[in-house]
Image (cartoon, rainbow, N blue to C red; front, side, top):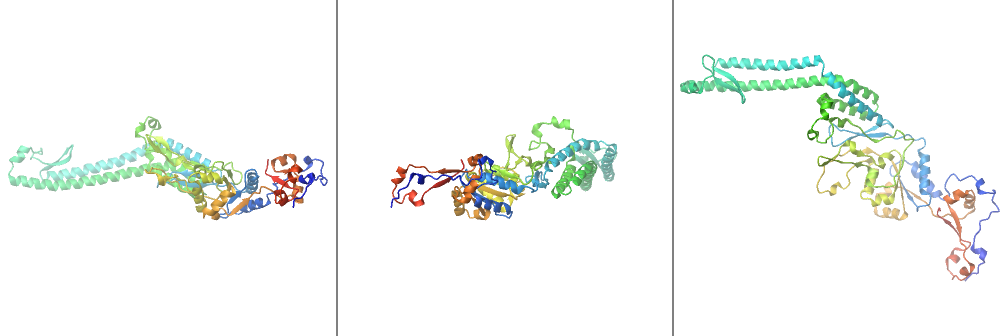
Length: 510
């Protein structure tokens, strides 16, 4: 039946009789949000568990205070937590196309980069001085002179052996030839040779063939001796180089001895400098005037491989990082490998690896929008793989779709320890629940922010504690004031009769 209502029944008025203050400015502001107890408990639960898969999906429309709540809870959680480690990429001397990822304590990556730059600068100055020593020149000359004396002795004995058979050795542009000699030791002319009896010519040819075999043996012996001398010269250079560079590298080994990856890298640097000591012996002024077309294929200095790419530097980080990524694209999350044009081709190297939000948030928390992650190609799959494998692997997206393979690099993956907070709508949440079998294994916690709250004595008590500024920022109470003439004409079963009166709506933040 239609119920007749009085005008005062159509409007609810906040009772002020039980207020214990004269003005809301006298009331202390609430320390936390109101009306979102369930969502806040879910956030506390998800943030407090560091096990794999307990990432958080936050549901709720914009304006419910979800971002404020997330930020406050995360800021409270990271207090007292240690800053995560730094990460660098360095040159891989064994496999150049796979740059090595090395871990250091927070704040030490930039210092190591500076130390390596100082090391190479000092060695470029001191290495040439080490090879200008007179003792080095004497040792080098003695090794070369020994080879010349051995070569001279070998050919002298061979020449004496040839003369005993009426033959001689003659040096020509084509090499050393065995020729017949006259009785006075002069080379035999073709005419004189042709005038000899056939038996004598045959004897000369047999002797010459045997002597050519002996000549080949001597030449091979001289070649082996030359290789030995070359190796001895290289060993001498390596010994001089080690004496020059070992004190400097030992100093860095001692400084970074607690980092096995750095110690191994310094050992590789030590061996590489010894192998390429000629680069350090070159005149720096001569390098500046070198023809660029005869530079290295990468177009960079040979010392470029000793550079350090600081990927993550947490020197100024207080506690665990909280990264709010406003644009969750593939490159912004996973990182990228940049390229530059060089002589008409695109080139890259380990110094052109750039970090993503996952690198910056590693050891802490990452907040992203679900819509951004899902609408950008390859992003959601890459994020899932990173969380499943607990590592960040920087790759070229869409490589499998290219018709022509390009030469690039494959950086070593970096271990990942991050808590992801994804913000999105309930619609996206249910889509992922339905169509992605991996979603529930990765996002086990759901924090659902409500858009309304019940009008109870408790909630009214909380509302009275809101200052005017808080009320404008947090929540507003709107009552329905409709003329009684309109309500009296409503048919049975209408909204008013179903829900009853008075009716109070608690709206979203203004």
